[in-house]
Image (cartoon, rainbow, N blue to C red; front, side):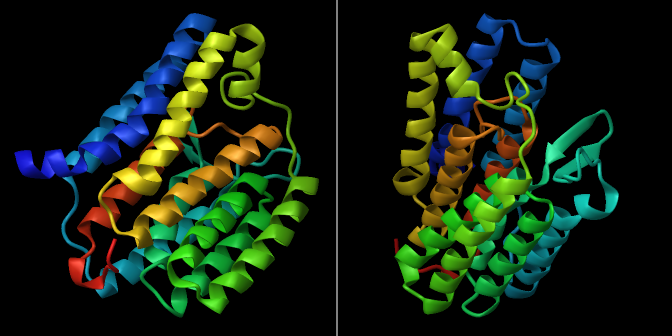
Length: 275
């Protein structure tokens, strides 16, 4: 057990760095008390997911999980809630979770294990992001595809990347909502209020990205889609009013990236390409 925790601690640290910086920012800037509580609970759940892990996932279970994640990503289109024709959130009692941040990191990990179904799944998810519409999710999916292309150079993934850029642009034109404090525009607002705090948040997010791309010990087929999906979410948050992953208020990204890393650790070693 201690050896497993030591192996997985870098992945947990990659998630925890921006979450802890975000908690500090919320405390200093007077966020609603429930915000840091929700993120702290999500981080505790993430720690349990990453360090304790899941049973080993076989090929059939991997495909079922992929289909389930894709269905969960699309579920808001059927259930809502909906705001100004936009449906990208999963209701969970008094909370709502951003469907893309919850599911896309793991979808990227699973798609990397499928030569044929992987590109199809990513393209299907892009169509869901277009229907929601959700620029951040479309950009994150495109980022995951770029990361996967760096590993495989598969022309089918290249087509997904091209489609992803056009879908992301279309979603951006139709999916803008007013910013919610401590959720969207976190880095921009922090810069205006406290450049030092903004620098801490930026460094924490950069450290998280570097760790996901290069420092978790996972194979490149997992690290690159994970890290590049985070790039997609971050760029969307910087470009327009979209949630800031990990550092902003919201449990979805914290649990989503934790689940994705846990899934990557539990996939059979035989199906992984060399790091």
